[in-house]
Length: 171
Image (cartoon, rainbow, N blue to C red; front, side, top):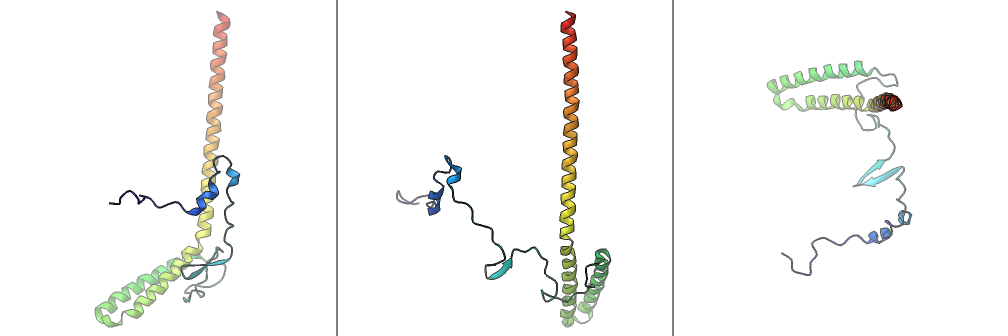
């Protein structure tokens, strides 16, 4: 255990002095840095702030479904799922009959899974929009219920006030 000269916690970073007057004057703190725009390096890889799904060709993967903006996601996912099931059965056969030749089947399965994953990721913006619509609709519903509850309680209070006034007037 350390003797009297060692601190149990490290000292704060030097920039804490920039916030010394924050409690008395919140505007005295320096503004936060601007958000990063464009590309930036992180741990040896370059990332971008654009929310664009890279195509399979950009990733070096062969695309198994048709290209274009009008993709029937349900049909293509079902087709890829059938292909995946077929390839898994073929892999089982190859593992039984020729175990040394399984690598090609595993690569085919990996390709199908990457295509399915890419199709599902391309549906994320639609899912986000639908989730946001659902959240907003439920908020609107809760607020309408709150307004109705307030109106009902106001009417009850007015009724009680009228009854109280009538009782006081009759005495």
